Image (cartoon, rainbow, N blue to C red):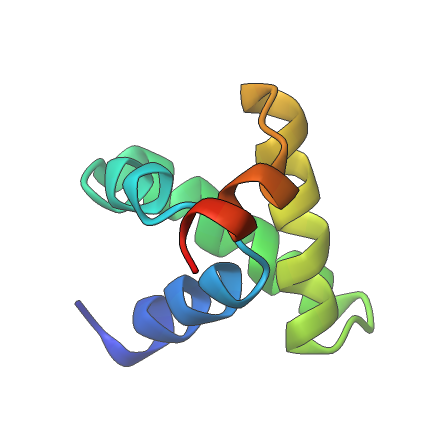
Length: 76
């Protein structure tokens, strides 16, 4: 895994995206490219990297109908 991808992975974990979800995304080259492009686009639009990760975590949560708060409690 390259440094940029590792950075995105860690930032999304900071916003409670489950590691199983991220592992699934990062195992598919097409999926990781979509994620990288979205992250870069948000940063280019003026988002800080943490804010970009937060927005993407919300999108992932909505798309997969996940409650990230539930995962936060389970992973403690």
